[in-house]
Amino acid sequence: MARFKYEGRDRAGKKNGVIQASSRREAMQKLKVQGIRVIAVEEVPETILTKDIAIGNPVKLQHMVIFLRQFSTLLKAGVTVVDSTKILAEQTESKPLTRVLTEVANELTEGNPFSEACAKHKRVFEPLFLNMMRAGEATGSLDETLERLAIHYEKQHQTRQKVMAALSYPAVVGVIAIGVVIFLLAAVVPTFVSMFEDFGGELPAITKFVLASSGFVQGYWYFLVLFVILLIVSITMIRKNKKSKYYFDSFMLRIPIFGPMLQKAVLARMTRTLSSLFSSSVPILQSLSIVEKVVENEVIARVIYHSRQSLEKGGSITEPMKKHWAFPPLVSQMIAIGEETGSLDAMLGKVADFYEQEVENTTDQLKALIEPLMIVVLAGLVGTIVTSIMVPMFEIFNNVQNF
Image (cartoon, rainbow, N blue to C red; front, side, top):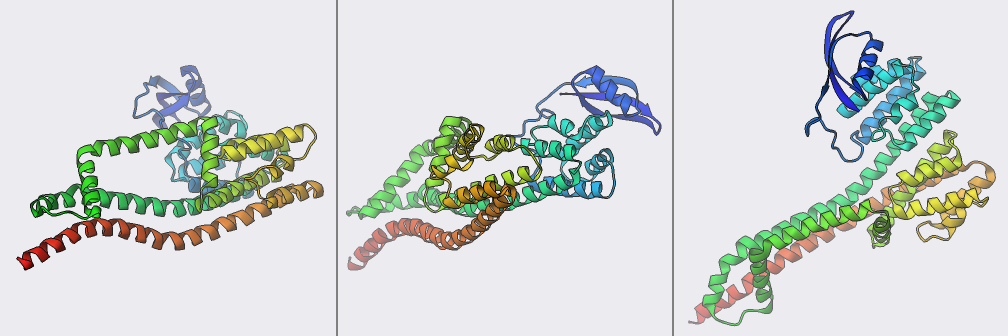
C-alpha cells in the first residue's frame, strides 16, 4: 500500500497527516469516512527512510501480549471493537503496532470485520492470530479468544527468552575469548619476537606454534573476517531454503547438550499452538496447516505435514509422530489419548506445560555447567599464550644469570 499526505478540515478545524491506501481515490474515501473534508491529497514517494525494510515481525512479542490483554479487558468492559482498537492505537508503546492499529481502526470504521482488517498486515498478525480471530468472531467469544492468545504468546515469549539466555551466554563468552586471543596474537606476542630471535636458542614447540599463529593473524587477518562473513551469509542462505533448512534443523536438534533443549522448546511451541487453535474451535486440518507454517523448524513441520495427510486419509495424527525420532513417546501417547477422549486441546496443553517446564529446568542446568566450563576454556587459551611467552623468557633469564 502507498502512503498519501493529505490536508483537510474536520469539525475541530484544520487537519494534516499521512494515510495508507492502495490508490489516491481510496485515500480520499477513507478520509471522507473519518469526517475529513479533503483539500489536497498527494502520494508520498517511497524512500529508504520510509520503506518498511524490517525483517520478520516488527512488533515485539511483549508488546503483542500487552495489546491482547488490554483488548480483551476493553471488550469484556463493553467497549466496542472499533473504539478499543482506537484506544489501544494511542496507548501502545510500539510504533509499528500504533501504525497498524490506526489502519485497522480505519478499516473497521468502513465496516470491515476485525480479522479481515488484520489480514492486510500479515507481517504483524501471523496465521495463528488471524484464524483464531475468525473463530472468535464466528462464535461471538472474541474477548476469550484474545485472552487465550495472550496466554499463548506469553508462554511462547518466556520459553524463547529462556532458550536465548542459555545460548547467548556461551556465544558472548566465546566472542570475548576469540577477541582476547586475537588481540594477544596481533598486539602482544609480536613485541617478543625480536627478543626470541636475539636469544638464538631452540624455542619450545608451544612458543613456535603461538608465534606461527601470531604471524598468520597479522598477515592474513582479512581471511578471518571473510570467513566470519561467509559463515553468516551461508547460514542465512541455508535457512531460507526449505531443503537445506531441514538438514540444518536436523543437525541442530541432534547436537549434544543444546540439541535436546532446542527439541523441547520446539515441541512446546508446537503443542501450545495446537492447543490454542483447538480451544478456539479452529478446524483440525486448518490448525495443523497453521502450525506447519509457524513452528519455525523444518523437521517438525514435515512431520506435521505427514500427520495432516494421515488425517485426511482417515488415519491418526500420531502415526507419523510415532515413527519419527524427534517426537518422544510422551507426545504421541498424550495426543492419542486426547483423540480417543475428545479432549485433544487439554492434552496438548498439558504436554506444552511439561516441555516448557523442561526447557526452564534444562536452561538452569546449562547455565550452571557452561559458566565454569567457559571460564576454564578462556583461561586455557590465555594461559597457553602466556606460557609460550614466559617459558623462553625464563630460559633467557637463566642464561643471563649463568653468564
